[in-house]
Structures are given as C-alpha cells and as structure tokens.
Amino acid sequence: MKTQILNPQSLYNPTPYGYSHMASVQAGSHLVFVAGQGGEDREGNLQADFRAQVKQAFANIQKALAEVHLEMKDIVKLSTLIVDYDAAKHQVLIEESRHIWPDKVYPAQTLIPVPKLALEDMLFEVEAIAVKA
Image 1 (cartoon, rainbow, N blue to C red):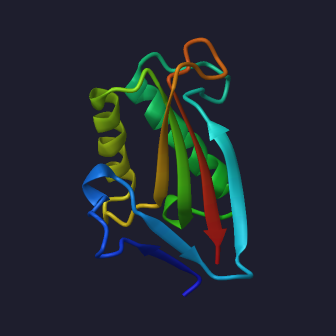
Image 2 (image 1 turned 30 degrees about the vertical axis):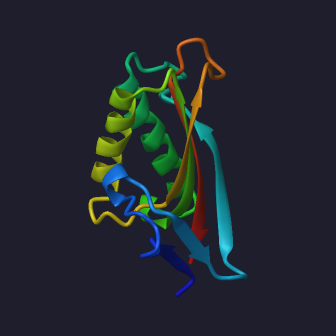
Image 3 (image 1 turned 90 degrees about the vertical axis):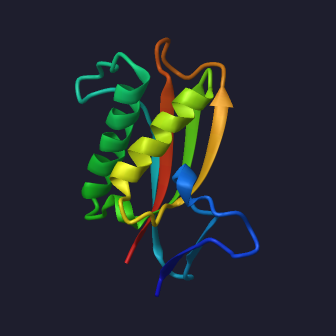
C-alpha cells in the first residue's frame, strides 16, 4: 500500500473533528501539491459567507486534482487557514469534511487561525498534498 492514513491508539481520536493524525506515503510515490485555494469561483468572484467559501475552496481543490486524475480521497495532508477563527467556524469545517470524506478516513490536517488572508473578504484557504498511485 503506497498511502496509509493512521490514528495511533496512543493519541486521542481526531476523527470527530474531521482529520487524522498521520499519513504515511511510500517512497517513490508521485506527490501532487495544490496551492492554497480560497472561496473564489472560476471568474474570481469570492463567495459571500464562511460556509460558502469553505465549500468553494474544497470544490477548487477537487477540480485541481481532477486535472491529474486524482480525487479527494487521494489527499494525505491539508493545511487550512481560517480568518477570525472561532468554534462556529471550526464546526463548519468539521461538517464539510464529513460530507467530503463520509467514510471518516480523513487526511492529516493542520488548522491555522490567521488575522487576514490575501483578499480583503477572504475567510478561508486550504492547500493540499495528494498522492498519485
């Protein structure tokens, strides 16, 4: 197996929060790095609210991966940035993650609260690392 998602028994169970502790990738695998994606549609229009931006950002990741014949299940690591982070925004991320990965095999993920992102009204950004089998 080239990729394994792991949650060691010696650590708490992170799956209720929509992520996993580790991803193990076999040497020689083809890695795909997707730059940070925000809530902009194809024309560059930024979605209005936080949930809409999260959905659009993940849709953008999905479209980028499709270019190299990968799917969301091929992601091994996410880095997420949330402007003015709070528990309600975290819950939105958890809920959207559950829709994307219904089998609860989540990629490893780091969530970083930030004061601001590249665009004035940008509230969410996510970058991904995926493995091509």
